[in-house]
Image (cartoon, rainbow, N blue to C red; front, side):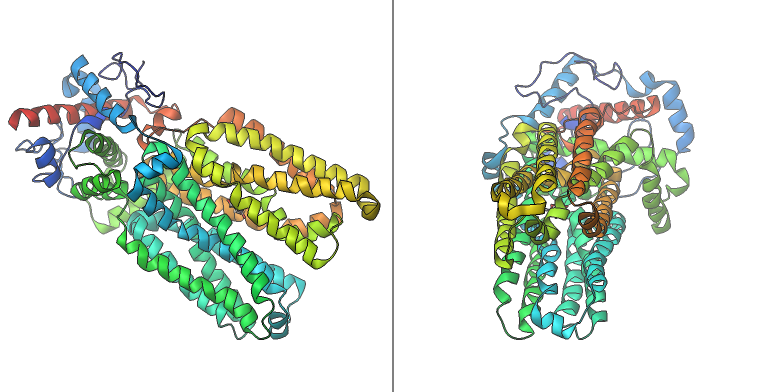
Length: 622
Ligand code: BGC
């Protein structure tokens, strides 16, 4: 197996783990502890740190978040680049073997799907609870279509068609903005507190809508709720993916999609139910019910842990170890916890060193410098190793929306009427069935995403979505002039709408959120996900705007339009999207064949080497 960090430790041939999931030994720091001084974790696991606490020859002093160097960083790095071997030392077969074994510990004996969740009950429970954010997303997105046509709502707010369109669309604009802003906040405040903040904002937005006295309450409420939904749509998958072991990461993030679909479904049936109430409660109740969910999320998430990866990035190494131990239900010094902790640690150290090298002017640890470093990370998203991943995050969401899913979800009753299902209740019922299929077919994704993988599902579904659109277009094109005489063909169209929804639900729906949450390196992960999620919302907004006129003007042509994007999506996945199933978040550089520069390679190699040497020497001390 060829390592990608040159021929130090990583080019040593090592046997492969039972599963193919263990890749070449890139971030090989996963065996040891670069533990902070007097760290409970390091004490338990690997004894004391070397007294001088030096980090290689770098005089690297790790005291929480601070780094003090006795030497100009640039000079230091230049020297290291000039004499890598002298600085790094040579790492031999034994260490490589050790690294390999610890790395394998992360993957070994891991179950996926339902079994994996049962074996990781605390992690699964945390991810399930966080997915309440998805429930709010789906409910809020879905509830409005029913409310807008309720008798008492229309009496109180006589709105034109374009006003109604604006009320729908303003949520998506808020979402777009919320998702975009939250990249910074998720790093600064933590993933967990960003969820709390977003839920509180949600309460404000929802309260305004529920108690609306004039249309300006509605506009403001929708926009504010949008800010929160957009934020939750990025921070929940981020949090879920960062607490997950690789074997069930896809499943746990797919829970967010499951919750979205349940939210859409519940909102539809609640609208359906309250429609019969003969007062303003008819529309205030479905809007107000969301307050309960928002409050549960805001308060409940406080009882769950921080993301261990975020903790580590803050220098809270001990806490990260304790959280990992709790999430994995293994002692803090078990090989698995140590391996995972060390792998994350190596990446965090690497990220910090790269930041100090690339932005020495912001290395003083001051608040202003940290803020500037945060902003600089956005620039990093456009660097060669990362930009292709940003494109994947943005494009998977572009294609997710341009499959036409929301054209079907938002305008299902109109579509069903146009294909000959006459009568409001028939078309409403058909729409309710869309919701049920959407929920039911998300379950296979939750169970099997980590078994089947992302690529096969995206590719298979792109084919099915294209076929479904084409068949619907043919049925409408040929028979819409006289549906009563072609009832069978009308039902074929309905059936293919259902096939379409089922195909989307087990693939592009969940994977649109899973993929961005796992492809970015830690230092830019929150920002990368935030831009990817904002792409989802911007494209969602565009679809909401263009669908009604398109259905009206092009009729069956609208389905051909979406079929073309599904067709394109197939080739895009085929050519550009790698498989990420079963890999740790720290292995993604390797998945993307990152062309890290030689300097970065040497830097990582030195960090990895140091972690191993430190671990060995600490064993000697113990
Ligand atoms: C999409 C939403 C869509 C929903 C349908 C989500 O993944 O982002 O726009 O309405 O799936 O289930």
